[in-house]
Image (tube, rainbow, N blue to C red):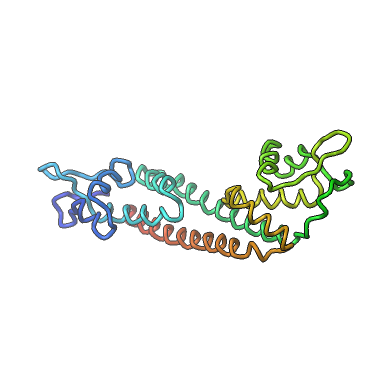
Length: 243
């Protein structure tokens, strides 16, 4: 709860901004956006902040690196209007996404371990293990148009059935589609994936992607640590509000 603006705990916008590299206008903007609780006013009309506001600001800034600005703002707004369960749900969603990202990275590493050298580039007849564009898109949870886009980008090379002209995805094409799908889920753009796929095909193994995978894992670890830091700051703010 906000203290009496005449008490010794009265803080000015500059007091909150100092130490965070913020402008006083940014502090006022955060209050107007609901990220900070409303401040009382002094008799002369100036904002009267308190240690509660300082704790809210610390919590918000600590949440941003792990959750992003939008989610961090939504968490603080929920807390400030008394919707603590909603705030915790938002925090849980980010943790769930990080877990999914970790599983995606593991899936990429597992897929790469199974990579073999490309088969001969000559067209091959449909085999029992081959599949068509619709079933493959369904297995990956994407649209057939996405597979055609990946083909145009040189990421997947289906061959054509000599009788029907339909695209036929052999084991190598399915493997490349799966790898492309996992890398896209990891945040890589098509023009970033193309050289990786090319290198993996020519090298026949995981080595060309080891640097990218290390960077991906490091980013996930950094985000995980940021979530811990944000959680501690949010807990401190919740405790101050309830005291």
